[in-house]
Amino acid sequence: MTTYVLVHGAWHGAWCWDRVVPLLEKAGHRAVAIDLPGHGQDRTPIAQVSLQAYADRVSEVLCAQEAPVVLVGHSMGGLAITQAAEQTPAKVRTLVYLTAFLLRDGQSLLDVAQADTDALVLPNLVQSADGTSAVVREDALKQVFYAGCPDEDVARAKSLLVPQATAPFATPVQTTAGNWGRIPRVYIECLRDRAISPAVQKQMYTASPCQRVISMDTDHSPFFSAPRELAQHLASL
Image 1 (tube, rainbow, N blue to C red):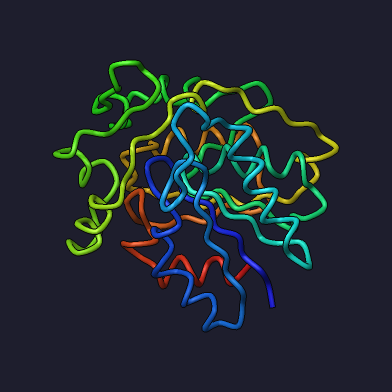
Image 2 (cartoon, rainbow, N blue to C red):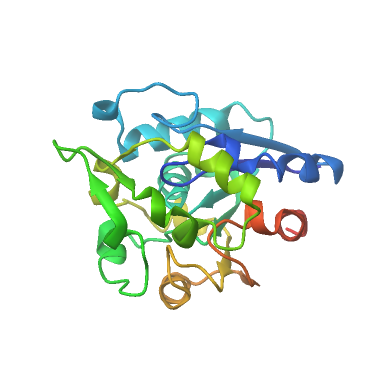
């Protein structure tokens, strides 16, 4: 039995894994989906949401597990799992980046996203008046995140998305070869993604080589558009 800790991306929450968790459990594994600070049912104020707060939350969950886990991060969740693995490496067996930001030491999400001219997130971003949070325009959500997803999942997601703190986007990850660098990595690329373009996904997993690269012919949200296939890939690890 393997324990999977599942970390969502920007604007989302643990709810986005609701179709995947039962499939992993049916295969005989444990699956723990968490809310990062300020997401889902967590009510941390926007002003207190940071990359360090994300990493601390993930590390807290890792330390509560009996054995090292497979740590999965989707999209922006890649930052959180990278930083958590750096500070709690003994609790991570494998890192899985699901169409996620796989950053090198000193890089920030914005460094990569601003150079991704094929992605649709930044052109559809609406910032709060004080600049501390942002949302994606509602009329663009399906095209950006859920192009291949069932309508009921899209409707549910729209009802549960929350404003995203912008501070984690601009914060560089800090990693070392002896901690994060020694943990095996897997990248799951999504070939129809409009939030992180396939070309940029490839750039990231080429710059930080992974033990294995798995391709899915899906949009940015395979936990909705192809949950069985995603669960099978995860279980294969």
